[in-house]
Image (cartoon, rainbow, N blue to C red; front, side, top):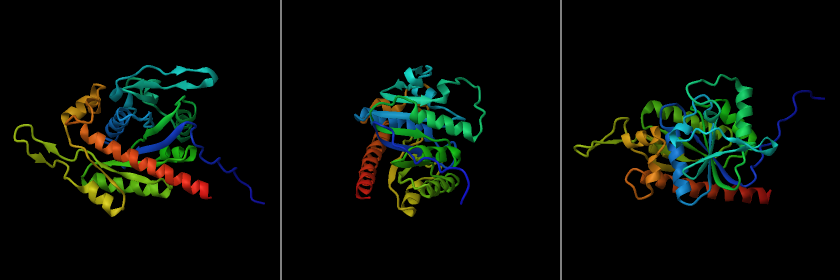
Length: 277
């Protein structure tokens, strides 16, 4: 008779949440949180009901980028009411430990926080719950896929070879844990000179699109390197707030529409497989 630890319970869907989408990257500094925040706002402005989990426990930047730092309210039954900013419901460890105080914790504590963010937060009815992952291929992704079934993942990379090398590791990681790839976003794709209006490829250009073709996954578009995008994040007023027709926001809305379309198709495909089985 075999002895050992009991098998962990299978991942459980969140009641009322139609799709859960992870936003990941192989390395830090590629603008993953900037993309996650602006995608969330764009999806909300397009009429979807959106939630955002800041799962980057060691570097929670979502509160700053969304301009909210209120401590969430505790409800009956130890439930947590998420904050709301710009039409997006949001939870972050940064609400509980604001400022520069670092979070020092080991894997089991991290797993517990991820479970709480997913299962104890009063998300209500959502079309999409986006999860802003920490960079790399560590414990958080494992905790996530063990807790809830993910609809898919979006990988963010700059076009530089170094970033793309790590992005490929992220793609392989999601593949290994059976999470469908919804696509790749190329961030900081180019810089447009404000004087001569010529494009300057500071981090090269087009590498993420080539990687998407190599891995046979969708390319979700390019986001330019723009001081206004950085300023929007620093001030809690992301550029997606300017709307789909704005010069700076349009690229995030284009990507958001693709993410929504692909995630809904993936959810429908998963439901069909479940019904057949």
